[in-house]
Length: 361
Image 1 (cartoon, rainbow, N blue to C red):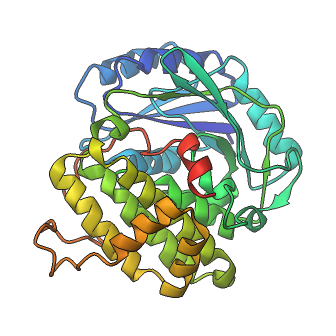
Image 2: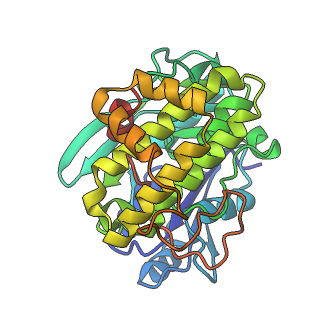
């Protein structure tokens, strides 16, 4: 069996793909494979990937005939992967030289289901170290123990799939695949499920080497279109699945508070949305708030700062879609709805770690 599979989705990243592939070559090993997934790119990305097959040891190229989005592309890579361990990289990010051997050594030494790592956020020439919001490092822990407390950032608020490494047994247990159809925030239900249902995890100590490119012109953060609203479907799924957990009474306050913080974050940045999308954001968020367990929601709002809690309370009192003349006509689909005819997804989530750290506290 291959020791390590690296799943790398690409979609219209011709400007960055060569740097990404160069970083993979700097980490190549006979026991590694690189599963390159071309998510139906329409620029020169497919040509760059095809050329890389001859120079990147262990490279395999899988092509989508239709764009399916980041979650679907990752799932394609997971299905094709043969490694005992799996990790991810986005097609516009990169690894430092020698990073993968250290990452693999960390999970083998700790013998856990998965290991989380810090990363370097890159905005132009500016570099910031973003750390996993968990204090204990270098020791094996119960995955469920890293969800709480509700009023502080924890490991479930650090959702980045590429910031970690995962044992194949998570694939076998159905825990590593991503929700189909989510065009953003696909990591959120995924990281919550990992921490609820996996047995063990750890945070690597002193391991740095993954570089996340922020501010890419094609990312949803820059575009502000309707695809960003999938964060509502994403957190609806988090709430629905957490409500069925044996410790729902403990975990729901955390999930609800985080949901509220993310809604508030988007409302505070509503000017980046197109006007019609901004109206849908308000309407869908109001509906989402009213569908939450109201006692848990009230407790969450009571514990938040006055500015955010006041804004969310006003939103909760907003007229329903049928009563609101400004509401968007397209109904909000539940998280279990099929993802037919969805538009292309981007390779970046709508929030970064800095947003998360302050937003849930």
